[in-house]
Length: 205
Length: 205
DNA sequence: TTATCATTCCATCATTTGTTGGAATAAATT
DNA sequence: AATTTATTCCAACAAATGATGGAATGATAA
Image 1 (cartoon, protein in one colour):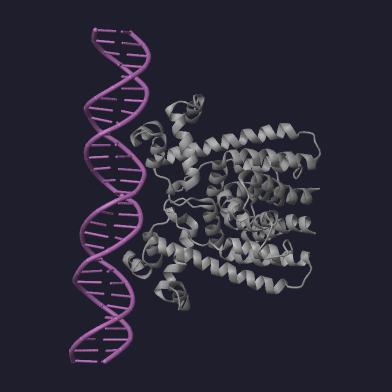
Image 2 (cartoon, chains in turn orange, cyan, yellow, brown):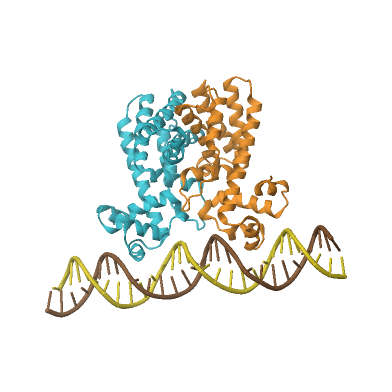
């Protein structure tokens, strides 16, 4: 059975999908409470009631957005895993950083929303399954930090969290950090990747 | 001339200071838009109008909170600088990580509010001077990554940002990350410090 | 063509939220 | 004691916000 989200993504030109795309962006910029349903409706150029017709409550739309970005990350991680399979660790790290950072710089709402969820309490506790724990364990296993995917030691999880967060930080923080460095966007992305490799390669090789 | 903020901090029992303390905590947990003036008033057990009497608009109170946490960070950085002065780099790093992480784990609102500001757009752009650029440059200089405090290269700034953010992440993300690891608070803090040292010592020594 | 269904908008509500005026009270000053 | 000043709360408001009913419109099926 196709979920409401899957249905929307089948046709990116559908109104439902357009709303979802706008919601991703705006929720990512302003957070849940900082976003109003009217802001999203305006971005799509529709009446607010049309938005409610397609997605129901604000919280439901937000959940759909979270599920959507999780799907994206999950797919990307699988894709990366395929590329790096069998290579030596240093090479794996370099490629993974390039790929993941590249992907997230193209979709900064993913980093924004992920960090939002880490750091913020919501007034009405939406307990969305965030998939992050599984992602983290999978990466730890893939990096050889755990023998068993289901039994990853705490220190390995902490290392992986550190890596992933570092990527998210550079992506989400671009608006704040880039002016500090005086770099243009392209150079900033390049420098971010270099910095990530600087820490990770020396740590793991 | 003592600013409104300084005046409040002179006497921590004053109503003005009590409101500020509660505001720090709640803004830190829920963000600017997620926090209502009524939530803060309730936490202090006062009427909402009393809050307005002391601090004026919500945005003004928020600014005071930001200035307050900046003061705290600034003082702590000076304190740390004194302790590590003259020691070899590896030792400096270890001590700095212990001290800063310890301080921030005691005052998680600082990390929360700092990251909030990095990653979030506010609907009404409050352009508070955030002092972060100076902090970053000072740390880069202190680590020997720049000859000149006023002329820090971009890659050095990126490295320092990476370090600082990594600390903030473990502090702010505790509620999300700790359940993933199964650690108690004390062990989590210890493990966070270890992980930070793992990446930084291997990178810089 | 007619009847059914899906989609969109207009108008409107009920709450929430930021904010203020003014009365009541307490504290300080004369 | 009388008077001013500072502090607190109650009540209320306007604007913003989440949400909905129902009419209009368009598409689809019969």
